[in-house]
Image 1 (cartoon, rainbow, N blue to C red):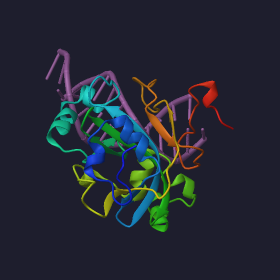
Image 2: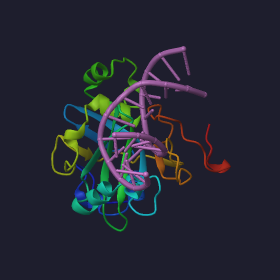
Image 3: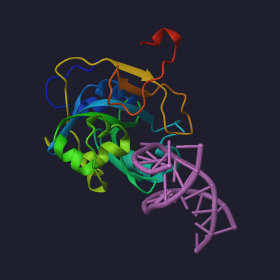
Image 4: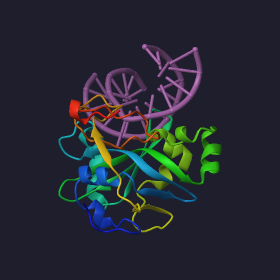
Length: 202
DNA sequence: TTCGTGATAGAG
DNA sequence: TCTATCACGAAG
């Protein structure tokens, strides 16, 4: 465990490896302008040898990794409709953490308006949904997420229990247990699948 | 289960 | 230019 709390997560946190970051970001609060939410679902991507990572096929993504510092936002547009929010990890292993779901905590009325929905559980239960709820777009690409108090990660008051399982929504290297969810959270996009029989609960 | 959507990148 | 691909979501 990275010892830094309480307060805002520093860039040092992201100077390690994508797996540790993805796991330990579960339970932290993502503040985004007037909105905020507890991170309940993340996925790790490695910059090298990971077929599912943008860096595997996109020179622009590799350039992004080399030109930016740990803790920088990597935002991209997907399927002609959705923005995806990632944060750059640069250290022992380079890569990204993709934010897949949040439990809304602040600015809920605003998120409801942006999503055109009332069900709080559905406001941020998916990578495209959370960016819509928080109005994250290309203008946030390359933003430093460790400096601006309005766009940052905040340590939780209590330690959260993260569960690892397979990444979803991808066609390549999906078997890697690089997805992390907050145990038993009703705010995740897809409930965690037990990797081993012994890990199953409920 | 399907299908729309647009940015990216590589081939021709 | 053309086309395959894509870490999605909503409707049905």
